[in-house]
Image (tube, rainbow, N blue to C red):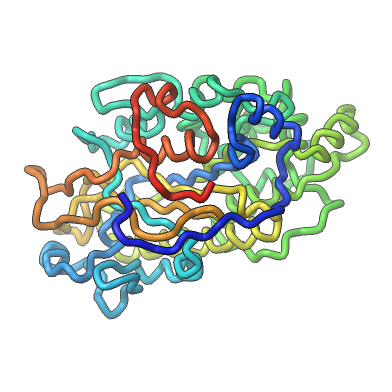
Length: 409
């Protein structure tokens, strides 16, 4: 599946993990490797609206690209060349150090068979890992945690930041939802803990204050030195990273001793989902997408710096996803319509960087003018479930999907 060969980078040894050491014994008892299990964090980044993949990972050497995109195509001299065929959008320049360090993988042609171009239905398919003709209720991560629960002492199974939707954690997972990340970090506590801006799903920790305080950074801990980007997405990343700086709960809270003990033992979450919205670019796409990809590139770069600072880079996997890509041919409004496949980014200290999957074959579009499928999105999920966490991916996904060789585990 890997299209071009790159050297692998081994995982650094001796990384300080923020999750419980006791979980290592649980995973070994279940027959897992010590390098797997929920001491490996997953961070999902949803590119909501359907990012245009062709202007993100650009097939600049294919003249058909410029034929299809006379007005919105990224000029060759502006694109960031990765090899003789492929380039990145200029707004993604902050990702170059990750690419050169071979800790960024780009998986091209990701989608599913018989694609649906409805935002609602395709999002549901990605969230539940269903076939296009199948309707499932639980999110794919909810099913994963049902097969192998996270340790009971974790503050939550997952945290959703910047969105009110639970997505792949829906219908059963213990989720702390933070639609407004700035309120979680910046406001006076505990006065606003019960506000609608902080939602608790499935009775996490029995109360909002207990669950949230076990993840919220405190004044007693030094602030991260990493500079985070401005804007809502930068605030979401800052919130996610500062969760790992948690140490002691305020002594005046009735559950303070319990919370202090739990955070000292390193209890947290297995997954964090962030959302970057605005990718439904039907008109005037160039400026809109450039601004969004700048937020993404700067945000991912800051996230990497923070994870290194927190000694979590080696134990974190970051992956983008979206409901679909965009149509290869531009429309009359300098935008793009809903399409099918798109490239996605995977980064982390144990990622084997490079280009994977199937590059765009612009001379072989389907009857609707869309790109053919290269990689089923559930192969990415199988990589997370099997290679990263050591779970039975086939049982969770209800079908066998070949994991991608993205990781050093």
